[in-house]
Length: 327
Length: 213
Image 1: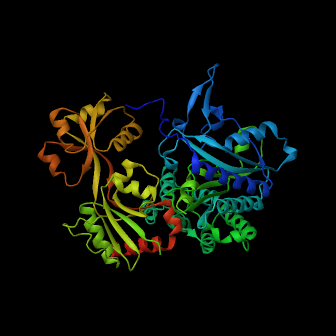
Image 2 (image 1 turned 180 degrees about the vertical axis):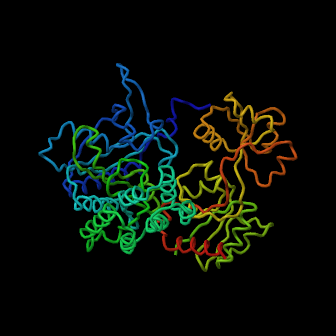
Image 3 (image 1 turned 135 degrees about the vertical axis):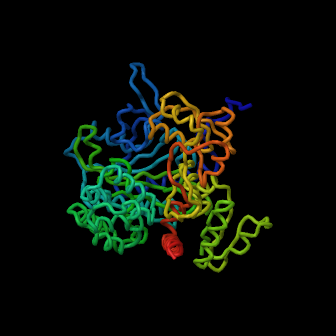
């Protein structure tokens, strides 16, 4: 029989000995990078009101949140990630005149599902939010910071794949397809279904350039040539702006130590309305899932009554520990 | 060079898939030898290795990155619901996921009453009845010979794969509704797709070309 006094609940664990030492070294390394880039630490509570992570802003489905009630009957949750919490705190405490704010965080997140991150329900995240700066330079700063954090973690081979959500969104709007078809196309592109999109679109009556764009999107990831390819499909104002934006970001990264880690992926689409500009994931060997995710979310602050652009990244510390273990 | 690891579904799919790989110049010697006890087959020259696994385990190997690529039926992909890229429809292993039962069950199926559904695919059945038919049903998970369930009265209908329909007919059952078409798919781990982009993209493109020939 399971001895409930000795065991931890499934998905939760003790960390000690060499592993804990490694984790502490890793976190201290991250703190050095945060300091170097001028980010100030912030701590938000583990427990928040449910509304902070509601559907419009959250990336965690409601049934995967740990929920309970306070004395007044309000629904509370254990935070599934930091970004909405930090945005809420900024809207509450930080005057608009002082923007931009550079904030860094680290701590535990809780998701009641076995599908994520090594089946851990409590996972450590570290990351930053850059709030109040909507420029391409801010995007580039976050990408460079991500590369520097991964290098600091001792990872030598990794890739940061960068996409732009407006590129697909504006082409989808322009295509005139119904919502259900767009959703199916979106899911095929996200799944990198190389040939399924053209079959799905069949003889639908849409702009031939957009049709080719949709068919190519699952394959549109890689180096600088991908930006040129995307350009040939940019029939809308917004899609042209998206590419111009990525080129501007690249201009800040090109020639630095980090240029070899950056690649482009126009098939990186998010189900969530959360992201408004760039979106990115970082990958490395030794773990089957991304080790970091981030992007721009200019509408999130508005959810908390403040209107300001924001961009950030979160690193999955447990995944990183896994990826560096074999060295 | 790092090995590119490919997980194949044991059985009929494996043979067809190995033939296809041979056609694009990637031979895995010994993999289709029925008497072998070997689990893994390597092509040293191309840096590719294959292994055979049970269908439902293929998405698991791929999701964790233990295999870069997997070949598996769409039924298994839907049922397992793993975070993996589904990159190519191989077009073979074609069949349909269907709701079946005796003709007399059609009325019960549409009556809105609580019915029982026996299946090897509880997630697919649940998804179909909940989100597409907006109906609450009791799902009974079985591990084989699903057709037996309505005959002995375990359930009103079943949710199962139909290829030719012979088994159904021989047991007095019929297809009542189609859930979705199925076939063999190529799945790829998200990280491998990025880290080994060139090799994997080249492989998928050559597979697609071989299929079109």
